[in-house]
Image 1 (spheres, rainbow, N blue to C red):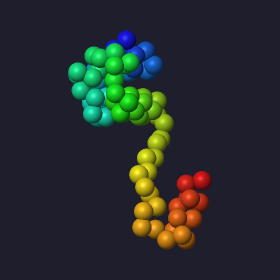
Image 2: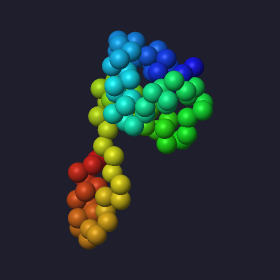
Image 3: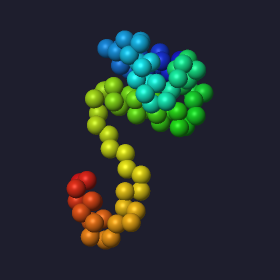
Length: 83
């Protein structure tokens, strides 16, 4: 099934236009949303998954190398804060 249709089936309370707008916020344009899900790249699938989490009201914190340039004490503080 195309991405938009699969997304709408998982979040039926969202209108089609809302789905497309949300997917666009995650970099998935019209050519992506009309493509079957199994033809999306792994990165595109990840972006669609993140959009789905947002649509469902799930809070997500994405950290990319958060401990770069931190000393051991700061790393431990960060780990405690994230627990």
